[in-house]
Amino acid sequence: MSSAIQLLIRDHSALKAGFSKVKSAKNMGQRIKALENLTNRITVHSSVETNLFHPALQKINPNLALIAEASHKRLQKEIDELKKIAPIDPSFATKFDGLEIQVQKHAETFEKGIFPVLSKELNGQDLEKMGEIYSKLHSITSTRPDMVSDGKSGYLSTLRRDDDALRCRSS
Image 1 (tube, rainbow, N blue to C red):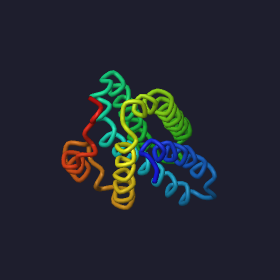
Image 2 (image 1 turned 60 degrees about the vertical axis):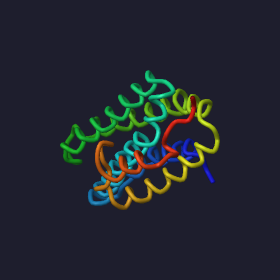
Image 3 (image 1 turned 180 degrees about the horizontal axis):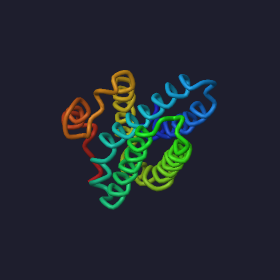
Image 4 (image 1 turned 90 degrees about the vertical axis):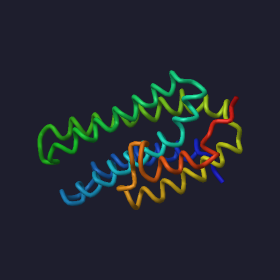
């Protein structure tokens, strides 16, 4: 079994690899499909990460929670702006590169700044339980992106409210 942090680090790597898939697409149809898969995966990743980690992070270190929230908002803003541009538009490449840079910054922020704090403050059992929940949520939302929410309604927030494993026991 993997801890939630290990799963998120793997997911960050998969997100980074998704950019290569878009760039190496052989035709426009493949490129559009790869782009849709990538942006959906980033959205799912951000939503699950937000719903799983932000409540604990808020209790442990509110300043880091703000940094995490800002990172996710930047990612979503980049995706929203990219979706407004056709892949054949000359400005698409610049916007796409901007999203790639934001994903790289996001991964670095979490892996070097946030995850070490969570690893120190949460016990291994909590991280394992969060890993189980992460896997379930990722599986569900990957096949049903319509279930991704803003954390205030929907499946993810219900699970967050109802599951004791998501409550920080670091006190």
